[in-house]
Structure formats: C-alpha cells, structure tokens
Image (cartoon, rainbow, N blue to C red; front, side):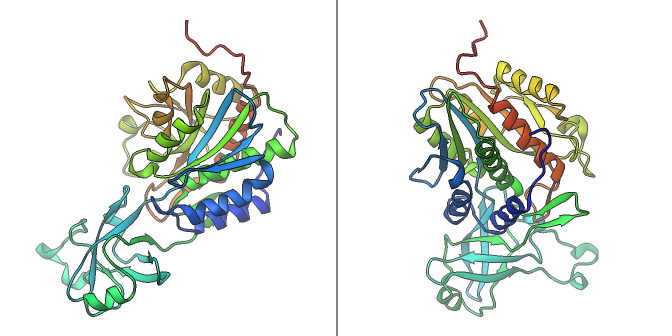
Length: 361
C-alpha cells in the first residue's frame, strides 16, 4: 500500500456514517452502520452493555493490540419546557451555545421518531445598541411549532429527550470533508479502513487486532474506561481529532501549530508510551508519511488517557487528525490527512512484534 486513496465504496460508507446521528448515550444506530461495514474484514465482534463495539482479527492470539476511535457526538438534553411551548436544553458533551441560534435540530423521541425544531433568536432589529445580547446556555430556546407545554409533550418530547443539530456532510474544494460529528466518527471510519486494507492485502498478524469504536468519549472517556477492562490489551493506538491552529483567532503559542493537509499529528504526553510513539514516528519517516508533532500537558483529553492508565498500565499512543471548527456543524478535515492517518496506523500495525521490548529499563 504505497499510496492510499479513499475509494467510492469507502466514501459512501463515510457519508452514511456521518449523516446518521449518534449522540452520546444513544450511539446504537451509528454502531450498526459501522459494524455492517467492517463485518467482512473481521472474524468476530462483541458489543458491551453501553454500546461500545469492537471487531477482532485473529481472536485466539494471546497478545492483543487495540486501534480505537470514539463513536459519539455532542448533543443536547431537554431540560425544561415552558408553558408556551419553548424548550430549554443542557449540554450532552461540549455542545456550543454560540452557534445554536438559527440552527435546525432533530429530537430523537422514543415513540414518535424524529421531531423537527429550530433554535430561535430575536431579530437583529431588536438587538441594536445597548440592547445587544449574545447567546448563552441560559437564553437559547428551541421552537417546535407548539403553543403549549402539553402540545410539546404530545409530540413525544419530554425532559431527557436528546436533540442533535440537523446537518449533512459535504466536500469543500474537492479537498476537504465538512460536517458535524467528524469528531470523531471520521476516526471510526479510519480504523475501519485499516481493517479493510489488512483483509484485502491478506495480512496475517501475529497477534489479535481489536478494532474498537467506543461510546461516551464526549462526557469523560467513559466507553474506553469500560472496554479496556474487558479487552485488557497489550498495546493501544488511539485516533482522534485535534485543532487546526491556523484557523483565525487561535493562538499557536498556546495551542500548538497544526494545519489541515500537513499530515497526522503525533502526540507527546505522559500518557503516551515513548517506545510506541517512536515506533510510529520511525514508520512515518520510513514510509515518507508527512506528520506533525503535538505536546500535551498532563492529559491528552482523549481515550488515550483511559487506555494508558488502566489494568496496571497499557503502552498507548495517539495519532490525531487536524480539524477546523471543532464542535460545530462545519467541522473540516483534509482528505489527504484522512488517507495518511489510515496509512500510518496500517503501517504501524503490521510492524508490531509481540516480542518487542516495551519496557524502558
């Protein structure tokens, strides 16, 4: 695999997967789409009680390697319904109140299916001068076209119902994917593509490979915390997104220097195992895969932390994908970077030797 390009079948899966909503705690429909795609490339799969799914190649091998992404997206919980039918929400993950006004939403009800709504906002005519207001979590509301609280409830909406922004993925200038929930279902796509390439290239691995799509990362790495105790891997390679800091209004000195199109981002952090990280870097150099470097203070903020510090310590590494406009409906990644992250994980996986020494001393 000297050069990787996303084929039409893979891109069709990517678009279907991204366009499906999978909010934190309700990821099942997205997991079904993901599992259906990877099933031809694995030997078995498992699902835990909270919905994390993993497929396994060579499941009887004692040495276990995990490649992992998270499946959930940010969303909103209904928290209050006013007497005149307006809905107030709280965050489910890091949902951004600043982008909410004028967005369309889908309520995911139990018995009434998808119910449409909109985040309303006062007209500009009423916000001039010292009357100008800004969106906050306390003043944004959703309108579902109901005049009373009872009418809202008749639509299947009650406290605890989840809603997501309504948006579909698109391509930008033929070079970028744009949409909501690329954080981090694009990661699920990338590890699925690694599995596909291993299958199509008839690679025989000397270890068990666990392709893990975890739930509930957006509320504290919870799915990874659970599944690591089940699998108890020997090595974990996690992929997630990081910020493209060339985006206007971002301070590079504070947040690092990463840009879409310059390759995978390899992280230095206490949770990242030095020997495993150096193996990834050496493989990138050997295969002429462009890459960028990140330094994370204390924690990476990704599922890497959950794997690294579990079950007595698991050598873990993080390969990130630079992304613009995180936690908005226009998250943006470079196609070329997606291809190179897939390739770097693939090349790293096929170079792992279960007998390699992962102890520092």
